[in-house]
Length: 157
Ligand code: FES
Image 1: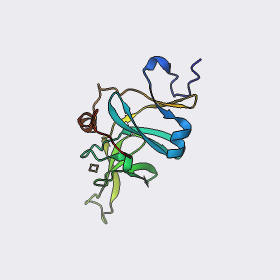
Image 2: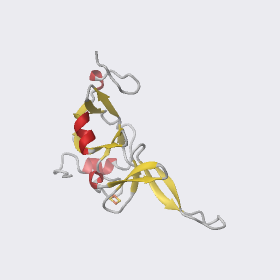
Image 3: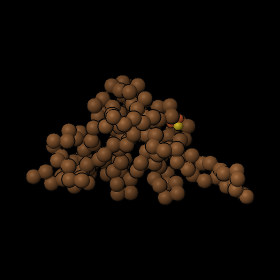
Image 4: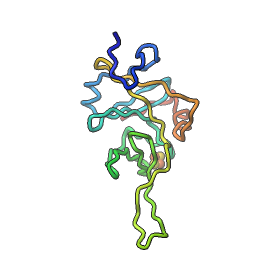
């Protein structure tokens, strides 16, 4: 009876999914912050899709929930309000603009530093939005700040 629209047909209730909000409310506000197991996350609704990421930037802990979303080479990225690092919403990759000095006329190109920001799986079920608990057997740079700010003060929008 769990009419799950999740990918992979997981059993919604037994997965320990954490309710973060109503689908229609997040669609309206476009972003919310939430805590999953004490960890601050931000959920964005952008161009028809939900994305959940650790809310503290992997660089120095900037509040991604206050950043602007920008399109970079066709990838939606959150731009950290502190030092303007760009992070893809889809994969959590850090992007940087680099040049290849060996090219005849070097022009900056966006390149990936790899996945830096932990992303969280989002499941929509019956108008409710859930986030899966993080798999801590794999680590990401943003974990350091997620731990540091865990159960800490309020992260105002
Ligand atoms: Fe996010 Fe520095 S803290 S760019």
